[in-house]
Amino acid sequence: MFDDRLPTALWAQALVRRAQLAGAGVFVLQKGEESRGDVLLKVASLDGEARAYRPQTNIEGERVFIDLSLQGIGPEEAAVDAYVARAKERDSDLWIIEIEDRDGRHFLTEPIEDLS
Image 1 (tube, rainbow, N blue to C red):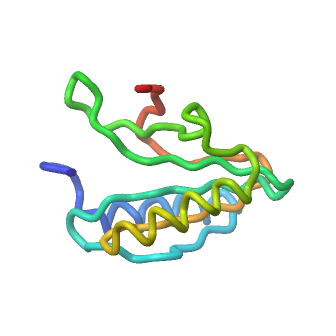
Image 2 (cartoon, rainbow, N blue to C red):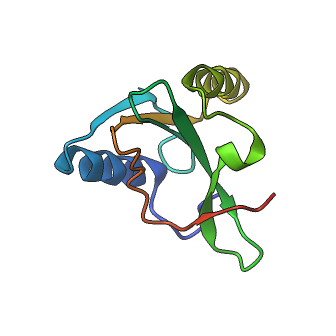
């Protein structure tokens, strides 16, 4: 999935560190395959709502993240949690990272796109 990109474990460590430095709570709920595992990011705003993001390659071949709320997942945190649980069952190599931030910041450096 990542081709010439950083190994997933290193990418995940950088995301966790960015969130921690900004004062957000961050948890790695599941560690996936170290070098090429896929990622699912949950961002909980601590008010009963959440968003989920997953990477995808856009038509230009660049790695972007998709806000799954644009595809009908969420914004209720329970709905996002149900999606995360299903994804976890489907893919044991999946990295699942949860950020708790009252402002709903995701701390991704990649673009967020709607590819639906």
